[in-house]
Amino acid sequence: MAEDDRNTDLDGLGTRIRQAQEAGGFSKAPKNSADEPPNSALGLAFRVGIELVSAVAVGLGIGWLLDKWLDTKPWLMLVFIILGGCAGILNVYRMARGFGYAAGYQRDEKPTDDTDRQ
Image (cartoon, rainbow, N blue to C red; front, side):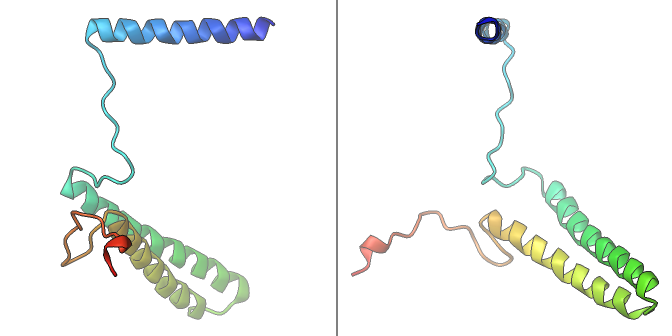
């Protein structure tokens, strides 16, 4: 019972805070949905760079640790650097594909519908 009263009080408090923010001219900034690309090309470039560098660094670290543990220097490190690079490129590809475009292609403006084909 007491817990229900607390939930009701918190809901009422949230409503009063929202009303006060709207009355004072304060509003939350609209959030970008996951489907929208970022507004900055520089932000996209940093993200691509970080994806590639971090994947190679993780591959380097795993390879170095395995080489040290199994005493197979430098073979596993080389293999995991290559695997890390491939993983980074795959992540960048997935990111570009998620934005709806890739190098040299434009985004489709209208969705294709299979019902039109006969």
